[in-house]
Image 1: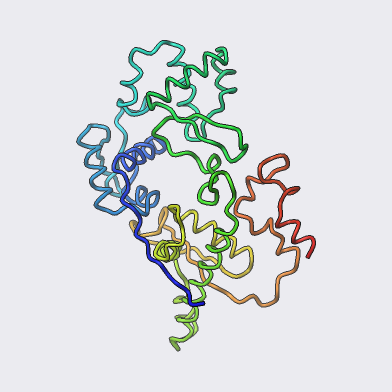
Image 2: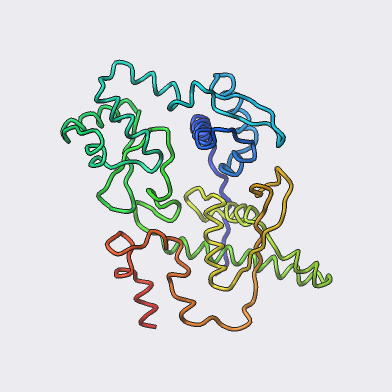
Length: 323
């Protein structure tokens, strides 16, 4: 069957979401962030969209524009550093002390969230009162409840404008708390196929061996762009997601990585460095132990006995042992 490629353009991001993400980054880096940091964190956002969001935040007085040795810096205003955006603080007017206490506890938890039982422990309030406060804060859109992949029945609470941490949602590899193993395998195959094609093109160029080798490398940004253009993902993938897949190919002996120096502002670079990848042919086939599923699993850090993902219920480990 012929392979069909469907190119799907990513939908336009909500301007408010872009602004909230920039504010969140400024809180994470209180000394200021560059446009390159914003671009690396939101590679799918066009330069014009970033500029509109930054200009709006500057005009609203939420950001300061500074100049440093590395270029322009965007820093959260001192009045904003004490807590979340003033828009959310204004909604707390009229709230009693108990509600403000619960809100402060949830704010301190950041984007990893906090369980209602932990809120009860820190606030020393009755559970019925906490549930009432949580519902009230949710109705005001000050906080939100997010299901955690660590436990199917566990919900954590965080501020409404925060993007949940990957440890909570599982990132792109989860859908409705289910690990998408087939999706990961498809991405694995397509990333390797892209690098293989690049290596074959370099060999067919008939250049000297050093030029061929250098031409066979691709940056994680190039691989990410290729995957986005394929349109095989229903969710938005970041370069970090693609690098996770590329790492599994490295562990499998199919790909090698090198790090080079890069000019400031180069697409795909971080702190003046860039990761490059190329497909390789293993000299000898890997041993069975090296090919154990654990070495290739992108959710290895989340795997533990008693959790949603554990060695005892891993179907891939069972199949590997039977083999």
